[in-house]
Length: 586
Image (cartoon, rainbow, N blue to C red; front, side, top):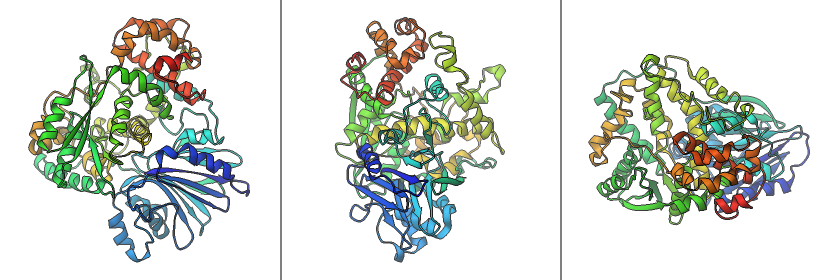
């Protein structure tokens, strides 16, 4: 785990060393264990390292004997198997990243289809005089780029490109509309005009700093469902999941995991308990507010059954006010997901003793866990509806009409793109979530919150072999009689029944609306006068919103509060200065 960044000159001039320094400095929080640099023939790479695998010889860049070089962020979990396939004799290090370089030397960019992991890397191919950028198929690791007449530049976080003067802070109104209405952006474009995302599974080939080829690796099948019984599926899942977790535990440092009261994390802990001789350390977030479901009791039962070392991390109202400014500043590619708050504090606590945690992201998307999937499957006359058909600010009369124009265009494009092959309505909805919601909300949240503390997050459910198995399950093994993740719940019921997998799903909720409502009279005027808010909202409407109350109003108030703080840090360039109230006052 680390960061990568670089500059490719388009006019045969040398790469500016100062710009490389600025990229490195902006990303040091991601890689506190060292930094590497590569400069040759108008190509400059910088990498900062969080040492996880090959602590001794894994410093980057890594080189092939033909002179080509790689810098990488992330982990390739099947690197030992790939080394044996490629031939151990040629390897110079024990680094997992060297396998990507040697696969490319042998098979070209098609070789990347063999990688199982989370990664974003850059290769300078000196033989064919080209640069390769590649991102893992689920988009677990992010990579951003900007193109100008003079250069092509890339980095693990957008703010690094801005800090180095390689991109500006101007905003795209269409992406801002998505953020306000559905809490995340879709597609290639980020909220910063000119800064784009490398898409999940995308590989770019560049010559002289210009893109000459694009290739996309897909992990969700277009084929029909697997004809399988519940018993056969349970047996195959046990094998697939055990292998995935075993690979995700490969590390030269100790690891822990995040445990909620849900099916996914309980399944993960159950498998880790099977595979580890020593007790697993599990971190659980808890809330002092009485209005939300507290997952501690069930998490305690699961942890006890697995003989885990269980650490409960309390997230209080004071944590909300104190941490939110720095959290909003850290999520430079913004997602207004309130789960960023406990995730940030969990990461801060876990990073005191660990460099790696395993987490359950992806289980809902692959096994059909969300309630919105059940709505998609129902006929419209019986309450069925299209996902994300309504925005957070619909009918509230708070934002200017032009601000939220066309906010659903990106989702609609994804729905059209994923409606192909032999996919059912459920499979299409899952694919849409995997296309945008997963990489641009959940995985950005995980990456920024953990890397702010130098902590690596691993997601075994987002393994290509897990996806190949889970996505092609028949709908009846995903959702049955209104119960999502039916097959996975059955597996957990047999392996770890004290997790109560068929109990009522409460969902993961942070009482942000309650906390905001209690401070609405004080908070509303502060938010209303922020520069980022005055240009998008109607005069007086914001203050009224913060004192109105109601579930919908609370969600809208949260989005505005997050955006106001995000805008101060990431657009105006003001560092957080104290808690929410102090920051908004300055």
